[in-house]
Image 1 (cartoon, one colour):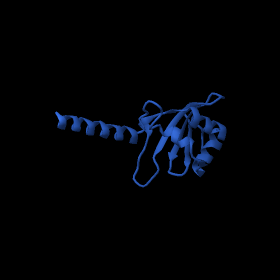
Image 2 (cartoon, helix red, strand yellow; image 1 turned 180 degrees about the vertical axis):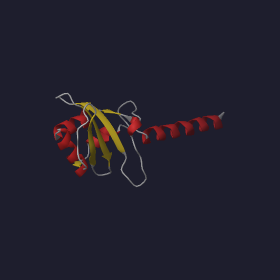
Image 3 (cartoon, helix red, strand yellow; image 1 turned 135 degrees about the vertical axis):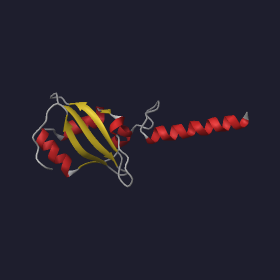
Length: 126
């Protein structure tokens, strides 16, 4: 019986580690990538600035997406050697349905891109 208990404990710990790595939120907010990203300095990529200008999205709307947005785990990306990225959806005060992609780097949070889901803006190359 002791070995079965050890196996179950090992399986439970493995599942907890996998869930945390994938951004699964546990009671108390543990494993919440958005919460962790909010604690780091925010930096905008050139691409994000270009898309924000074209799509008429300001810094306040991006910060609101980080503060109040809903994370879409299906759009989370983990690529070797790169910061994991997380997409947060948020409706701005002026009614734009936004998806903002953030990179959760060790020392900073980077705004990767900003998408207006309701309007196909004729943006040029960024």
